[in-house]
Amino acid sequence: MKKWKSVAALLLAVSTIVSCSKSSVEKAGDRAVENNASNSLVRQSSTRIKAMISSSDTIRFYYNREGGLDSVIGKYDRYIVYGKGKYADSMAHYFKSDFGQYLENLYTKIKYNEEGRMIEYTMTHPRFPGWPPARYILHYNQSGDLTEQRMQVENNQKKENFYRYNEDNDLVWNNTVIDGAGDHICTLRSDGQLNPFYKMDLMYIIFGYNEKQQMLLSKHNLVEVYREYEGRLITFLNEYDEDGRLIKKTDLRYNDYFTLSYY
Image 1: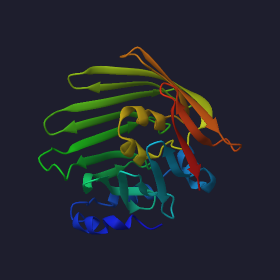
Image 2 (image 1 turned 120 degrees about the vertical axis):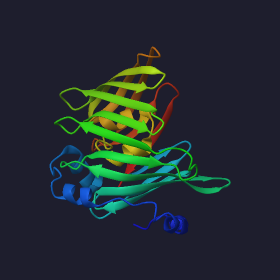
Image 3 (image 1 turned 60 degrees about the horizontal axis):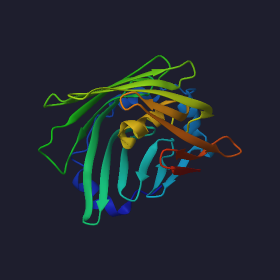
């Protein structure tokens, strides 16, 4: 699949910035768990996401021959992945506006554990060189579900996420702890249909903020989030095709929705 051609010159310009040893990727390659639910789901062409369409954007997903993400291209945000097979070394985030195209963020020093799960990455801000880099550390349980994510920047600002799951590998509790803002606890509930985003590690970076990240972490699709810190219940309506694939998710607060298509 061809990359987004219009950023070729920019990619060359930042090639000296985007660097990360491939040793961690190579070590993880053959040791990845071939039967884990996420890899099985992604490898099947019929359940590989092609596009995510909302009222404001169409986001297209492209993959390499090994099934890893190659790029994620939207109207404004575009992510270009560099790596080996299913494992990324680094990723560039471009933002497109009426005033031009910008290299917004770089994600480098991506590392994986022996099971092939992403355990570390660093985010830098090329547009704002005075901003300090942020280092992210991720931990998992024995089932390979994310249980803890810590963000640390050089000025000692911290953000931490803690996650708990039920026996079905569905997220049921999340606490986001932000310096100066305390705990932000949510309880969650999912249905029994497989989540096509489950264990797509790079999407945890791309989705970026907590509400969308929660949608990724359950094996089944999220239907309810109760935000204890706001006293607010958020519900979702999931719709499926005849093969049981998620094709539409509606946030019933605003009747806002996105649809999914598949390769």
